[in-house]
Image (tube, rainbow, N blue to C red; front, side, top):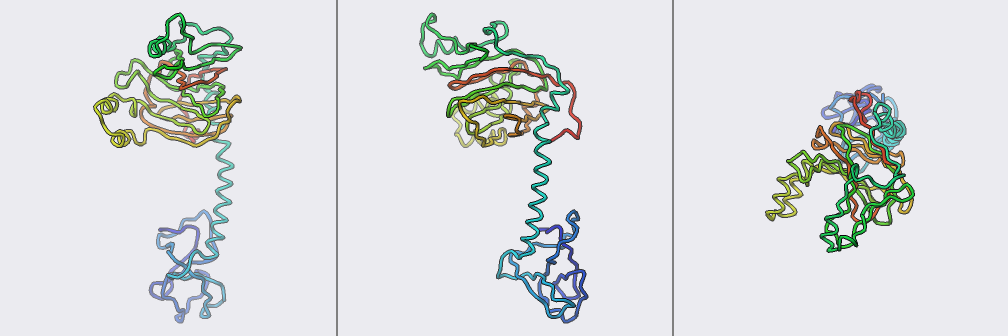
Length: 338
């Protein structure tokens, strides 16, 4: 391994390294590599000859011009004090980097919105329009064996809120879907979850026949995590669903879709409103909740060129309000990449 940030040069003795600021002595009793305690230019990456020892001890040499400590490789001890100092310095830099990176991450979606066009906005002041919205009520009614005149719609609007509730006994999550066409976009909404609940924002293209029901990708939000998933080349790909139907093992299916999703642990408090922002651009999805960066994931299926609708998929219940979609026309510059 290479240890950065420490100036070292070869001594005249075989198999040794010696502090560069010292005069070397033929009497230097070195039989192993020596690392300098004092760090040099923090942004300089020195020679690959610099190595991290597995075990290290401190050593005061009586044979050099000063009594400055230096480090000799040995098989007896653990990290030396200079390594502690280096870690502290590196940690401070990492903290500074985090402070500078986090604001940039939190601004990714806002920058995308600034160069996008608002193509859908719904504050749910009116009941759902059948021309603009589709639900899977008929499937729920049939699978739950409910008389048609007794079926309660799974998606209702009340006081500016889209309330989605899965019908008891239904064999599928409740779905409320609306048409909106884009390739790259930002989707925003506010949501409220009950405890231990979740919902998904699904992106679909019914014209894509290589994947079940046109499912391309989705973002799943729960009270404990956020999942970003490429469905087109992952679990919803026809070839993978066929394997499942033909009795493929869970291990085989997991191997096939490995790397097609990303789960990020994140606590989202139940019974209160949160703001969700999703950026889809190229093969990338970025997720923010309450203006905080949560996760980013890239996969080829996300880059499908035509998205035809978005859908809320709800295993049990969720409330949604202030839905908006911003279509992005231009590609981002290099400097805007996170």
